[in-house]
Image (cartoon, rainbow, N blue to C red):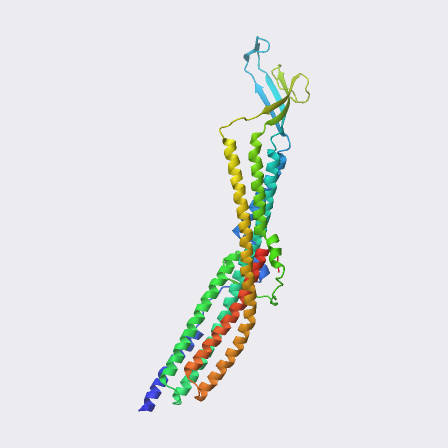
Length: 446
Protein backbone atom coordinates (compact mmCIF):
# COMPACT_ATOMS: atom_id res chain seq x y z
CA UNK A 1 0.00 0.00 0.00
CA UNK A 2 2.78 2.41 0.92
CA UNK A 3 4.65 1.46 -2.24
CA UNK A 4 1.56 2.23 -4.31
CA UNK A 5 1.20 5.65 -2.64
CA UNK A 6 4.87 6.34 -3.16
CA UNK A 7 4.58 5.37 -6.82
CA UNK A 8 1.53 7.55 -7.29
CA UNK A 9 3.17 10.54 -5.61
CA UNK A 10 6.36 9.89 -7.56
CA UNK A 11 4.32 10.18 -10.75
CA UNK A 12 2.83 13.45 -9.56
CA UNK A 13 6.27 14.82 -8.70
CA UNK A 14 7.62 13.69 -12.06
CA UNK A 15 4.79 15.59 -13.72
CA UNK A 16 5.65 18.66 -11.67
CA UNK A 17 9.28 18.37 -12.66
CA UNK A 18 8.33 17.97 -16.30
CA UNK A 19 6.08 21.02 -16.04
CA UNK A 20 8.88 23.04 -14.49
CA UNK A 21 11.36 21.95 -17.14
CA UNK A 22 8.88 22.75 -19.90
CA UNK A 23 8.30 26.19 -18.43
CA UNK A 24 12.05 26.71 -18.30
CA UNK A 25 12.54 25.52 -21.88
CA UNK A 26 9.70 27.69 -23.19
CA UNK A 27 11.31 30.34 -25.37
CA UNK A 28 11.40 33.77 -23.83
CA UNK A 29 9.91 36.77 -25.68
CA UNK A 30 12.03 37.77 -28.64
CA UNK A 31 14.55 40.49 -27.88
CA UNK A 32 15.05 42.58 -31.04
CA UNK A 33 18.32 43.98 -29.71
CA UNK A 34 20.03 43.69 -33.06
CA UNK A 35 22.07 46.83 -32.45
CA UNK A 36 25.08 46.44 -30.18
CA UNK A 37 27.11 49.40 -28.93
CA UNK A 38 30.14 49.96 -26.79
CA UNK A 39 30.17 52.68 -24.16
CA UNK A 40 32.13 55.06 -26.41
CA UNK A 41 29.68 54.52 -29.28
CA UNK A 42 26.69 54.95 -26.97
CA UNK A 43 28.07 58.26 -25.66
CA UNK A 44 28.80 59.49 -29.19
CA UNK A 45 25.26 58.72 -30.33
CA UNK A 46 23.70 60.25 -27.21
CA UNK A 47 25.65 63.50 -27.64
CA UNK A 48 24.14 63.84 -31.11
CA UNK A 49 20.48 63.36 -30.19
CA UNK A 50 19.82 64.29 -26.57
CA UNK A 51 17.61 67.42 -26.25
CA UNK A 52 19.70 68.84 -23.40
CA UNK A 53 22.76 68.88 -25.64
CA UNK A 54 20.79 70.45 -28.49
CA UNK A 55 19.54 73.17 -26.14
CA UNK A 56 23.05 73.76 -24.79
CA UNK A 57 24.40 74.15 -28.32
CA UNK A 58 21.56 76.57 -29.08
CA UNK A 59 22.56 78.63 -26.03
CA UNK A 60 26.17 78.70 -27.24
CA UNK A 61 25.14 79.91 -30.70
CA UNK A 62 22.78 82.51 -29.21
CA UNK A 63 25.48 83.74 -26.83
CA UNK A 64 27.96 83.98 -29.70
CA UNK A 65 25.50 86.07 -31.69
CA UNK A 66 24.96 88.28 -28.63
CA UNK A 67 28.72 88.77 -28.32
CA UNK A 68 28.99 89.85 -31.98
CA UNK A 69 26.05 92.22 -31.48
CA UNK A 70 27.74 93.76 -28.42
CA UNK A 71 30.92 94.36 -30.43
CA UNK A 72 28.93 95.72 -33.35
CA UNK A 73 27.41 98.37 -31.11
CA UNK A 74 30.78 100.21 -31.23
CA UNK A 75 30.50 100.52 -35.03
CA UNK A 76 28.42 103.14 -36.83
CA UNK A 77 24.99 102.33 -38.17
CA UNK A 78 24.92 102.69 -41.97
CA UNK A 79 21.72 103.22 -43.91
CA UNK A 80 21.06 103.70 -47.61
CA UNK A 81 17.87 104.80 -49.33
CA UNK A 82 16.71 105.64 -52.84
CA UNK A 83 13.46 106.60 -54.53
CA UNK A 84 11.95 107.29 -57.89
CA UNK A 85 8.86 109.47 -58.38
CA UNK A 86 6.92 110.10 -61.55
CA UNK A 87 4.67 113.20 -61.47
CA UNK A 88 1.34 113.74 -63.31
CA UNK A 89 1.02 115.50 -66.68
CA UNK A 90 0.12 118.92 -65.20
CA UNK A 91 1.28 119.89 -61.79
CA UNK A 92 2.47 122.82 -59.75
CA UNK A 93 6.23 123.12 -59.32
CA UNK A 94 6.73 124.59 -55.87
CA UNK A 95 10.35 125.38 -56.63
CA UNK A 96 9.56 127.70 -59.56
CA UNK A 97 5.97 128.65 -58.77
CA UNK A 98 4.82 127.69 -62.26
CA UNK A 99 2.45 125.19 -63.81
CA UNK A 100 4.49 122.51 -65.55
CA UNK A 101 3.05 120.46 -68.39
CA UNK A 102 4.26 117.01 -69.30
CA UNK A 103 5.38 114.21 -67.10
CA UNK A 104 8.81 113.78 -65.62
CA UNK A 105 10.55 111.56 -63.15
CA UNK A 106 12.59 112.56 -60.12
CA UNK A 107 15.26 110.50 -58.40
CA UNK A 108 16.81 110.73 -54.98
CA UNK A 109 19.36 108.70 -53.05
CA UNK A 110 21.00 109.07 -49.67
CA UNK A 111 23.56 107.34 -47.45
CA UNK A 112 23.57 107.98 -43.72
CA UNK A 113 25.85 107.07 -40.79
CA UNK A 114 25.00 107.30 -37.12
CA UNK A 115 27.32 106.63 -34.18
CA UNK A 116 26.95 107.02 -30.42
CA UNK A 117 30.17 108.65 -29.26
CA UNK A 118 29.34 108.26 -25.57
CA UNK A 119 26.51 106.31 -23.94
CA UNK A 120 27.45 106.20 -20.28
CA UNK A 121 29.62 103.06 -20.71
CA UNK A 122 26.51 101.04 -21.62
CA UNK A 123 28.18 99.33 -24.57
CA UNK A 124 31.18 98.32 -22.47
CA UNK A 125 28.88 96.83 -19.83
CA UNK A 126 26.88 95.03 -22.51
CA UNK A 127 30.09 93.63 -23.98
CA UNK A 128 31.19 92.31 -20.57
CA UNK A 129 27.76 90.81 -20.01
CA UNK A 130 27.79 89.19 -23.46
CA UNK A 131 31.27 87.76 -22.89
CA UNK A 132 30.24 86.35 -19.51
CA UNK A 133 27.05 84.92 -21.00
CA UNK A 134 29.10 83.23 -23.71
CA UNK A 135 31.44 81.77 -21.08
CA UNK A 136 28.42 80.51 -19.14
CA UNK A 137 26.97 78.94 -22.29
CA UNK A 138 30.29 77.25 -23.07
CA UNK A 139 30.51 75.91 -19.52
CA UNK A 140 26.87 74.83 -19.73
CA UNK A 141 27.59 72.87 -22.90
CA UNK A 142 30.54 71.15 -21.24
CA UNK A 143 28.38 70.42 -18.21
CA UNK A 144 25.61 68.94 -20.38
CA UNK A 145 28.14 66.80 -22.23
CA UNK A 146 29.33 65.25 -19.00
CA UNK A 147 25.79 64.94 -17.64
CA UNK A 148 24.64 63.16 -20.79
CA UNK A 149 27.78 61.02 -20.68
CA UNK A 150 27.06 60.07 -17.07
CA UNK A 151 23.40 59.30 -17.83
CA UNK A 152 24.41 57.21 -20.83
CA UNK A 153 26.98 55.35 -18.74
CA UNK A 154 24.33 54.72 -16.08
CA UNK A 155 21.93 53.19 -18.60
CA UNK A 156 24.74 51.34 -20.35
CA UNK A 157 26.01 49.76 -17.13
CA UNK A 158 22.44 49.06 -16.00
CA UNK A 159 21.88 47.09 -19.21
CA UNK A 160 25.14 45.19 -18.64
CA UNK A 161 24.21 44.46 -15.02
CA UNK A 162 20.74 43.25 -16.00
CA UNK A 163 22.27 40.96 -18.61
CA UNK A 164 24.57 39.44 -16.01
CA UNK A 165 21.66 39.13 -13.58
CA UNK A 166 19.80 37.14 -16.24
CA UNK A 167 22.73 34.73 -16.32
CA UNK A 168 22.66 34.55 -12.53
CA UNK A 169 18.94 33.77 -12.63
CA UNK A 170 19.51 31.11 -15.29
CA UNK A 171 22.16 29.50 -13.12
CA UNK A 172 19.74 29.64 -10.19
CA UNK A 173 17.11 27.81 -12.24
CA UNK A 174 19.61 25.13 -13.25
CA UNK A 175 20.63 24.60 -9.63
CA UNK A 176 16.98 24.48 -8.54
CA UNK A 177 16.27 21.83 -11.18
CA UNK A 178 19.22 19.83 -9.94
CA UNK A 179 18.04 20.08 -6.33
CA UNK A 180 14.54 19.04 -7.33
CA UNK A 181 15.88 16.01 -9.15
CA UNK A 182 17.91 15.02 -6.08
CA UNK A 183 14.82 15.38 -3.88
CA UNK A 184 12.78 13.26 -6.31
CA UNK A 185 15.44 10.57 -6.43
CA UNK A 186 15.67 10.51 -2.64
CA UNK A 187 11.88 10.35 -2.33
CA UNK A 188 11.64 7.48 -4.78
CA UNK A 189 14.34 5.70 -2.80
CA UNK A 190 12.40 6.31 0.42
CA UNK A 191 15.10 8.59 1.85
CA UNK A 192 13.09 11.86 1.65
CA UNK A 193 9.62 13.05 2.45
CA UNK A 194 6.96 14.51 0.20
CA UNK A 195 7.61 17.86 1.82
CA UNK A 196 11.13 17.90 0.35
CA UNK A 197 9.93 17.33 -3.20
CA UNK A 198 7.17 19.89 -2.90
CA UNK A 199 9.53 22.43 -1.36
CA UNK A 200 12.07 21.84 -4.12
CA UNK A 201 9.32 22.24 -6.74
CA UNK A 202 8.27 25.57 -5.21
CA UNK A 203 11.89 26.68 -5.16
CA UNK A 204 12.19 25.85 -8.87
CA UNK A 205 9.06 27.89 -9.58
CA UNK A 206 10.44 30.85 -7.64
CA UNK A 207 13.70 30.59 -9.57
CA UNK A 208 11.79 30.61 -12.85
CA UNK A 209 9.82 33.67 -11.76
CA UNK A 210 13.09 35.37 -10.83
CA UNK A 211 14.42 34.57 -14.30
CA UNK A 212 11.33 36.06 -15.96
CA UNK A 213 11.69 39.19 -13.86
CA UNK A 214 15.38 39.46 -14.74
CA UNK A 215 14.54 39.10 -18.44
CA UNK A 216 11.87 41.80 -18.14
CA UNK A 217 14.39 44.11 -16.43
CA UNK A 218 16.90 43.43 -19.20
CA UNK A 219 14.35 44.25 -21.91
CA UNK A 220 13.49 47.49 -20.11
CA UNK A 221 17.11 48.56 -19.65
CA UNK A 222 17.95 47.78 -23.29
CA UNK A 223 14.94 49.82 -24.41
CA UNK A 224 16.05 52.72 -22.20
CA UNK A 225 19.54 52.49 -23.65
CA UNK A 226 18.05 52.57 -27.14
CA UNK A 227 16.14 55.72 -26.32
CA UNK A 228 19.25 57.30 -24.84
CA UNK A 229 21.29 56.72 -28.01
CA UNK A 230 18.44 57.81 -30.30
CA UNK A 231 17.13 54.59 -31.86
CA UNK A 232 13.64 53.11 -31.82
CA UNK A 233 14.68 49.64 -30.70
CA UNK A 234 16.37 47.90 -27.78
CA UNK A 235 20.15 48.14 -27.79
CA UNK A 236 22.54 45.61 -26.28
CA UNK A 237 25.50 46.96 -24.33
CA UNK A 238 28.89 45.48 -25.18
CA UNK A 239 31.31 45.63 -22.23
CA UNK A 240 34.87 46.87 -22.50
CA UNK A 241 37.61 44.32 -22.14
CA UNK A 242 39.53 46.26 -19.46
CA UNK A 243 38.00 46.98 -16.06
CA UNK A 244 39.13 50.43 -14.83
CA UNK A 245 41.03 50.55 -11.59
CA UNK A 246 40.24 52.95 -8.76
CA UNK A 247 41.72 56.43 -9.45
CA UNK A 248 43.89 58.47 -7.14
CA UNK A 249 41.55 60.81 -5.27
CA UNK A 250 44.15 62.64 -3.18
CA UNK A 251 43.93 66.00 -4.95
CA UNK A 252 40.75 65.29 -6.90
CA UNK A 253 38.42 67.25 -4.64
CA UNK A 254 40.25 70.59 -4.79
CA UNK A 255 40.89 70.18 -8.51
CA UNK A 256 37.29 69.28 -9.25
CA UNK A 257 35.90 72.36 -7.50
CA UNK A 258 37.98 74.54 -9.81
CA UNK A 259 37.35 72.63 -13.03
CA UNK A 260 33.73 71.62 -12.47
CA UNK A 261 31.57 72.80 -15.39
CA UNK A 262 28.71 73.53 -12.98
CA UNK A 263 30.91 75.82 -10.89
CA UNK A 264 32.35 77.54 -13.97
CA UNK A 265 28.89 78.13 -15.38
CA UNK A 266 27.62 79.61 -12.10
CA UNK A 267 30.64 81.92 -11.81
CA UNK A 268 30.16 83.13 -15.40
CA UNK A 269 26.53 83.89 -14.61
CA UNK A 270 27.72 86.01 -11.66
CA UNK A 271 29.93 88.03 -14.01
CA UNK A 272 27.06 88.50 -16.44
CA UNK A 273 24.75 89.67 -13.63
CA UNK A 274 27.42 92.10 -12.42
CA UNK A 275 27.75 93.54 -15.93
CA UNK A 276 23.99 94.09 -16.06
CA UNK A 277 24.36 96.34 -13.02
CA UNK A 278 26.70 98.49 -15.12
CA UNK A 279 24.13 98.54 -17.93
CA UNK A 280 21.50 99.82 -15.48
CA UNK A 281 23.85 102.51 -14.18
CA UNK A 282 24.55 103.78 -17.70
CA UNK A 283 21.03 105.22 -17.80
CA UNK A 284 22.21 107.99 -15.44
CA UNK A 285 24.70 109.29 -18.04
CA UNK A 286 23.95 111.41 -21.12
CA UNK A 287 24.16 109.99 -24.63
CA UNK A 288 26.29 111.89 -27.15
CA UNK A 289 25.74 110.95 -30.80
CA UNK A 290 26.92 112.00 -34.24
CA UNK A 291 25.23 111.45 -37.58
CA UNK A 292 26.19 112.20 -41.16
CA UNK A 293 24.09 112.04 -44.32
CA UNK A 294 24.87 112.61 -47.98
CA UNK A 295 22.37 112.44 -50.84
CA UNK A 296 21.52 113.52 -54.35
CA UNK A 297 18.20 114.60 -55.85
CA UNK A 298 17.54 115.09 -59.56
CA UNK A 299 14.70 115.63 -62.05
CA UNK A 300 14.25 114.29 -65.57
CA UNK A 301 12.46 117.28 -67.07
CA UNK A 302 12.33 115.81 -70.57
CA UNK A 303 9.67 113.37 -69.59
CA UNK A 304 11.79 110.38 -70.37
CA UNK A 305 14.18 108.24 -68.39
CA UNK A 306 17.83 108.86 -68.78
CA UNK A 307 19.80 105.93 -70.11
CA UNK A 308 21.30 105.40 -66.68
CA UNK A 309 19.80 107.68 -64.02
CA UNK A 310 22.86 107.46 -61.72
CA UNK A 311 25.51 107.32 -64.41
CA UNK A 312 26.61 110.83 -63.41
CA UNK A 313 25.73 113.28 -60.66
CA UNK A 314 25.56 116.18 -63.14
CA UNK A 315 22.18 117.83 -62.86
CA UNK A 316 21.52 116.39 -59.43
CA UNK A 317 21.42 118.48 -56.28
CA UNK A 318 23.78 117.34 -53.54
CA UNK A 319 22.57 117.63 -49.96
CA UNK A 320 24.64 116.62 -46.95
CA UNK A 321 24.42 117.13 -43.22
CA UNK A 322 26.55 116.55 -40.13
CA UNK A 323 24.73 116.53 -36.82
CA UNK A 324 25.78 116.18 -33.20
CA UNK A 325 23.21 115.56 -30.51
CA UNK A 326 23.21 115.26 -26.73
CA UNK A 327 20.42 113.49 -24.87
CA UNK A 328 20.27 113.29 -21.09
CA UNK A 329 17.33 111.87 -19.23
CA UNK A 330 17.11 113.77 -15.96
CA UNK A 331 14.02 112.05 -14.58
CA UNK A 332 11.89 109.18 -15.90
CA UNK A 333 9.58 108.32 -13.06
CA UNK A 334 12.13 106.24 -11.08
CA UNK A 335 12.42 103.71 -13.90
CA UNK A 336 16.21 103.89 -13.71
CA UNK A 337 16.13 103.29 -9.99
CA UNK A 338 13.87 100.25 -10.45
CA UNK A 339 16.20 98.84 -13.12
CA UNK A 340 19.17 99.42 -10.82
CA UNK A 341 17.51 97.57 -7.96
CA UNK A 342 16.49 94.70 -10.23
CA UNK A 343 20.02 94.34 -11.60
CA UNK A 344 21.57 94.49 -8.12
CA UNK A 345 19.18 91.86 -6.78
CA UNK A 346 19.92 89.64 -9.77
CA UNK A 347 23.65 89.96 -9.10
CA UNK A 348 23.20 89.07 -5.41
CA UNK A 349 21.08 86.04 -6.31
CA UNK A 350 23.66 84.89 -8.85
CA UNK A 351 26.40 85.16 -6.23
CA UNK A 352 24.38 83.14 -3.74
CA UNK A 353 23.60 80.51 -6.37
CA UNK A 354 27.26 80.27 -7.38
CA UNK A 355 28.33 79.77 -3.78
CA UNK A 356 25.63 77.16 -3.26
CA UNK A 357 26.58 75.41 -6.50
CA UNK A 358 30.16 75.16 -5.32
CA UNK A 359 29.03 73.66 -2.00
CA UNK A 360 26.62 71.34 -3.79
CA UNK A 361 29.34 70.06 -6.12
CA UNK A 362 31.61 69.52 -3.13
CA UNK A 363 28.92 67.55 -1.30
CA UNK A 364 28.04 65.47 -4.37
CA UNK A 365 31.69 64.81 -5.04
CA UNK A 366 32.18 63.59 -1.47
CA UNK A 367 29.14 61.33 -1.82
CA UNK A 368 30.16 59.86 -5.18
CA UNK A 369 33.80 59.37 -4.15
CA UNK A 370 32.64 57.48 -1.07
CA UNK A 371 30.24 55.42 -3.17
CA UNK A 372 32.97 54.67 -5.71
CA UNK A 373 35.54 53.60 -3.12
CA UNK A 374 32.95 51.58 -1.19
CA UNK A 375 31.75 49.81 -4.34
CA UNK A 376 35.34 49.04 -5.34
CA UNK A 377 35.98 47.48 -1.94
CA UNK A 378 32.73 45.53 -2.23
CA UNK A 379 33.91 44.00 -5.50
CA UNK A 380 36.65 42.07 -3.71
CA UNK A 381 34.47 41.21 -0.73
CA UNK A 382 31.57 39.96 -2.84
CA UNK A 383 33.98 37.94 -4.96
CA UNK A 384 35.17 36.15 -1.83
CA UNK A 385 31.56 35.70 -0.74
CA UNK A 386 30.72 34.02 -4.04
CA UNK A 387 33.60 31.59 -3.62
CA UNK A 388 32.56 30.81 -0.04
CA UNK A 389 28.86 30.50 -0.93
CA UNK A 390 29.68 28.19 -3.84
CA UNK A 391 31.63 25.88 -1.56
CA UNK A 392 28.95 26.02 1.14
CA UNK A 393 26.29 25.11 -1.38
CA UNK A 394 28.38 22.20 -2.68
CA UNK A 395 28.87 20.89 0.85
CA UNK A 396 25.20 21.18 1.72
CA UNK A 397 24.20 19.49 -1.52
CA UNK A 398 26.50 16.56 -0.78
CA UNK A 399 25.28 16.35 2.81
CA UNK A 400 21.69 16.29 1.63
CA UNK A 401 22.49 13.67 -0.97
CA UNK A 402 24.03 11.46 1.73
CA UNK A 403 21.20 12.12 4.18
CA UNK A 404 23.37 14.07 6.64
CA UNK A 405 21.68 17.38 5.94
CA UNK A 406 18.21 18.75 5.32
CA UNK A 407 16.72 20.28 2.22
CA UNK A 408 16.22 23.53 4.14
CA UNK A 409 19.99 23.75 4.66
CA UNK A 410 20.55 23.18 0.96
CA UNK A 411 17.98 25.79 -0.09
CA UNK A 412 19.46 28.28 2.35
CA UNK A 413 22.91 27.69 0.87
CA UNK A 414 21.41 28.09 -2.62
CA UNK A 415 19.76 31.39 -1.68
CA UNK A 416 23.02 32.63 -0.16
CA UNK A 417 24.92 31.77 -3.35
CA UNK A 418 22.38 33.53 -5.56
CA UNK A 419 22.45 36.64 -3.36
CA UNK A 420 26.25 36.62 -3.33
CA UNK A 421 26.32 36.53 -7.14
CA UNK A 422 23.77 39.34 -7.34
CA UNK A 423 25.80 41.42 -4.86
CA UNK A 424 28.94 40.87 -6.92
CA UNK A 425 27.25 42.11 -10.09
CA UNK A 426 25.76 45.13 -8.33
CA UNK A 427 29.07 46.04 -6.68
CA UNK A 428 30.92 45.99 -9.98
CA UNK A 429 28.46 48.23 -11.80
CA UNK A 430 27.83 50.48 -8.79
CA UNK A 431 31.54 51.25 -8.95
CA UNK A 432 31.42 52.04 -12.67
CA UNK A 433 28.33 54.23 -12.32
CA UNK A 434 29.80 56.15 -9.36
CA UNK A 435 33.02 56.63 -11.32
CA UNK A 436 31.04 58.13 -14.23
CA UNK A 437 29.26 60.49 -11.82
CA UNK A 438 32.62 61.67 -10.41
CA UNK A 439 33.84 62.38 -13.95
CA UNK A 440 30.69 64.41 -14.63
CA UNK A 441 31.23 66.49 -11.50
CA UNK A 442 34.95 66.99 -12.13
CA UNK A 443 34.54 67.82 -15.81
CA UNK A 444 37.27 65.49 -17.03
CA UNK A 445 38.02 61.79 -17.32
CA UNK A 446 39.65 60.09 -14.34
